[in-house]
Image (cartoon, rainbow over all chains, first blue to last red; front, side):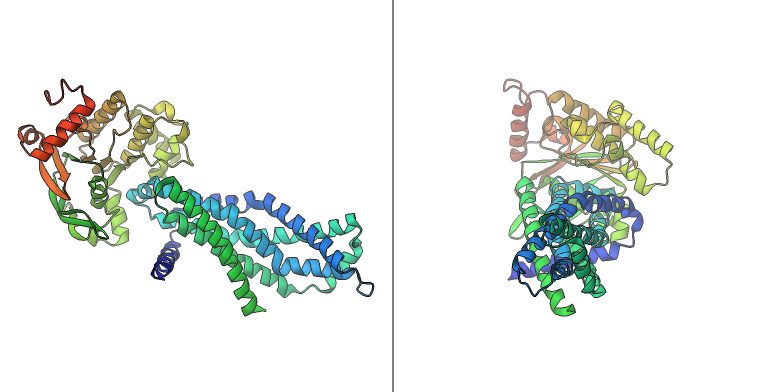
Length: 246
Length: 254
């Protein structure tokens, strides 16, 4: 219990330091651009892949479960598109990114910590939190919503194509279904979720990496914790947001 | 001038050292020696407040470094150059950018001026041809020299070297020792050298501080060291001598 409280205290302190030093834009401007590319551009491939297959599988499975004569096939389009917009695009892409982005951040910072690169930054007169943590968390806040859009577009596209190729639902019916139940609030909700998940994953990874200790083994441990905790906190945040906002 | 007054450090129940006091005058080089794990590097990190003590103070030109707010502390730290034990070069950028790093953030120099300064610093450490190399392509000795070039690029008043010759062959160690002397003499830098390499201490230091049994066990000039009959210190020096010389010559000519 005491350990958990200590962890919360240190995590909050790190976030407070990051928030306070976020005005020192000159220190992290270059790093921010670099991180935006790493978190956003470098993740597009895996997000497209995740989106396409999620949409495709969802379409096929929904069609399989709705083999009832009195339900129109366009319903498949509405179920798939709404599920992707409201839940799957944000959650599944964030779980994938917890592994890709969270693990990278924790490993980078952990390695820098145990090889005294963080001390080197501090000894030069840098605020290491401003230089290392702020750009990584900001890149999560900026890029996760962008990646949510990519996942959603390719998820719905994947569902549409899978429906056509398997003959489960014609494209026109899929589009009709998707349009008829479309609610803009679901997209807003997806954005809010991805924004929160971006913060959770990058801040937890920064925390675990920044306080890593104990050489290569310590870095490995921090990376595992960052990934696992990132996934758990995404699921918890997903539940809380659903309970609060829906 | 660096004044260390009654410094005590504990990690939970473990006392690293207590009541450590000594002074380093301007332009002087002090070698801090002691067995592995006696807290030499921890002491070094207290001098520029990378760590804070449980008790005591460190005065830099009369100013207590622990009483500074974070902004002032960062300014004070810019007066220090630090050569870390593992070099602590940034892996994601090449040699040139590692050395240029402090200039890009702490000066308003133009690209051409940065280039000139970096190449000059690399030339000082004999590595101008390695400017475009990645840090992973550098040997241990080269990494230390690049880290040294980075540490001196802002022309610090104080230099701290953490085990500068550890893991290096004797020839490269001598090269590093020569560079430490060169830095100290040409730039009139006050230096702190953390090491357990007595050969290095005798070559570069004006004074020696010996950490043993959780305290500053002995401290004095190199001449004092040669005359000293401090038992633990002599045991440490003799053991170090055996590491760098054959048993036949050990202890004779230092």
